[in-house]
Length: 114
Ligand code: AMP
Image 1 (cartoon, protein in one colour):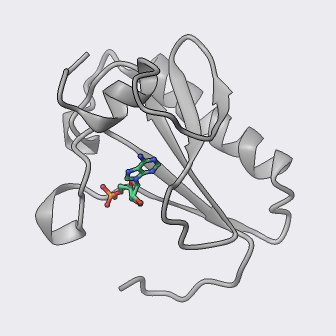
Image 2 (cartoon, rainbow, N blue to C red):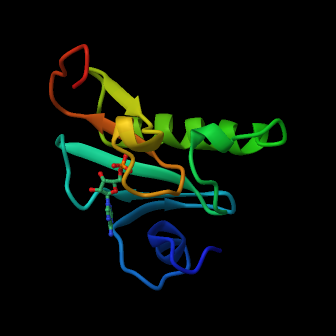
């Protein structure tokens, strides 16, 4: 755990969140500032700064992250489609330095993203 990391503190239960899934590897909770009717963040419980820091031993974690996303999308009724975004670094607008996948759905989305 990184003591000053917001998402590590959510994992530790120090900061409340609307948690919709938790297992040994990942946590999923609703974004506090939703950009779509469904906006869920899916994160690894252990600290990884961003997708740029995923390594060759993270295969099980990646599988779990994506399986969780598909399960949440199903539970949220996103049968018309959904989008996953992960921001890396300043130009992409990453504001929390703990890897997180945004699951967005429940409305039509434009392409390319802004
Ligand atoms: P990013 O800008 O890609 O780093 O995404 C960070 C996301 O975390 C933003 O969409 C924020 O709205 C969200 N966020 C920040 N603080 C919280 C919080 N306490 N609980 C849930 N979501 C949060």
